[in-house]
Length: 429
Image 1: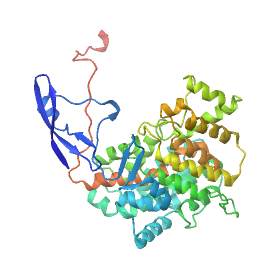
Image 2: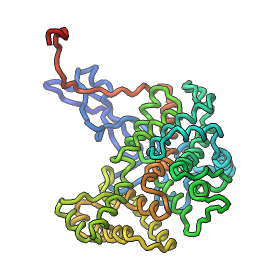
Image 3: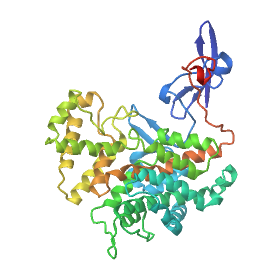
């Protein structure tokens, strides 16, 4: 949808440029022809004010705390949907009917097991290998077992999209569970075709001859965690998936790149940083009170509060906070870190210092607490994020692949190095 042209004045000359209007009223100045018309490019380090694509998947209004997938509010999805159903919505654009949801669920359920020969791949990693390194490598290797899905031919890869999407959503949790057990020196657990998160917890925590039993609602809380992470617009990892996909890469290669981007502590590692912060507070003998004052005096960094996009309360945090309280009550564990977390949360919600600066607890704050409470080790937190984000990566790859007019992504730069220099032979240097 287009509006009348806007313009940019450079020196004494005006350059007319189209204005693109989004369905939620967002406006963008289309600068694609600016360089050809004027010789200028735009500069926006970190792309904080640059629209890199047009997408119909997710809408965010950070000022008002709004998050919607395909037009459905995250609050409604959290109240009535599930991770698998939301994954279908994110990928295909509509909520599925009973038959389609059943078919999608069964496709995911039936594809949980990995090829037996992939077990040997895990033996090639040292015990201390980071789980994200293993996950990225294994997802890329997984594609080698499905050559019909990794042709790097758009038409053929799209023809197998339904099968590939179900396969990746299913097997990413299997690979994660196998990574955990490899590092613990435990035998792999074969999937039993359970519900999505029940299957994951079974493969993670079952013991020989003793099947894991969820007695505290861990599966339900984990399903909500995954659903709340299903997609989040053009973040670092999703933009990476689109960048790789724009070159024609298949879905396995693209999501593997997404995992690598997510690995960064400023992106997917935020919930790990929350637990590390709580551990440091506890180790210092503080119950959180001194830390709160130190944060207000800018002497300590408060992790898990505030958000780059949301200038209001992160809507996912409000939802997950209630789930955290319920899970912790049902588990009934006595953990000093959780007591500290509750004290920090109370301060952020009641203290004018935090309120005036929009330093509300974000989704990473609560997700770290929930994952710790149900027994997920800290080094696996970012892997859990990747499992949840898989539908969004698939949907964004699909948008790129289906757009026959899409071009390879190739940002410009402002060169700041040396101008032309004469080469000097080594004996004269």
